[in-house]
Amino acid sequence: MLSKSIILSLIGVLFVAFSVSAGTSVLEGVVKDASGRPIKGADVRIETKNFSKILKTDASGRYVTDVLAVGTYQVTLVINGQVKASIRDAKTQVNKPTQVNFDLSGKRASADKVKRPTAYGKDFMDIRPSTHP
Image (cartoon, rainbow, N blue to C red):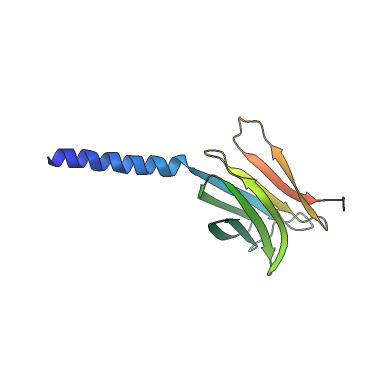
């Protein structure tokens, strides 16, 4: 009887571990100022209907969060309390990190999705200046 309960417990643990790893994703990126230098300590807000998380950029201007549910997120850059840029449709995928970079070298920002070849396993989304009104 004891061995049956241990086996069932192990199956339960494996099921939970598989469920968590099968449905998670990574969102990461770099934040640069108008001169192309990394911005340390900027807030990057990652939000969806029932989820919100705020990350701080490191000395290299980098941020990363993992164990996100696969889905579509709004990613907003906030510096000194001011929203500098936002992207509403950052889509994450299982086992394929999504990168959202913020480049503040212009007055306005728009999103450009840049895909690497699938061998690299990452999708990129850069926020760059826009010249259109």
